[in-house]
Length: 178
Image 1 (cartoon, helix red, strand yellow):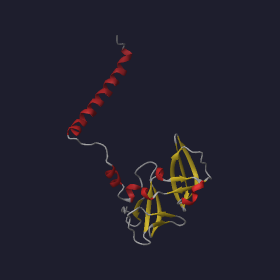
Image 2 (tube, helix red, strand yellow; image 1 turned 120 degrees about the vertical axis):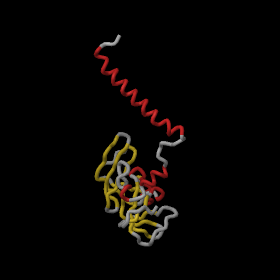
Image 3 (cartoon, one colour; image 1 turned 30 degrees about the vertical axis):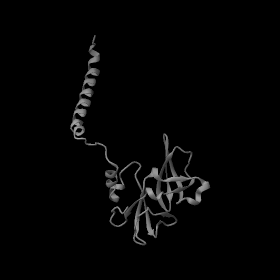
Image 4 (cartoon, one colour; image 1 turned 180 degrees about the vertical axis):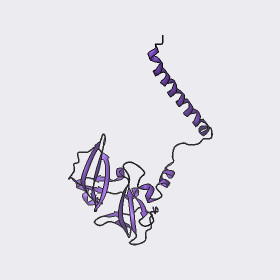
């Protein structure tokens, strides 16, 4: 038997069930047309076609570092990073180099000679199973997202910026180069 106090909860249950049904019905034409509702990787990369979009897509946001083209490398004030394979850059061209915080690699001290540079950690935020570190790298701000670590503010870590994870933008126009 239904008690009067049960009616509001049953009413909400009906509303939620009706909304879920409408949402499923709304997707049926897409399924019948074999339309994939997921965003393809190429579309996601196209969204990062300009510096403006890349600067606010994702959380934490993409790191954007000022660098210059130098032969087959990208040079900062005190660091050098290999340029992505197949990337043709004008000599000494000013660039904005983007890399997602979770693509920056913390290098063990024993392999520090293979690092792109050093991160002087200013802030450490433990986010459950991950740690977000923010600090100075080559005179600029760099965010690094790693599996949970015991890193503390004041620590100095060797980090690598993998060439295959870099996004290159023209510093003047903001257009994506690679």
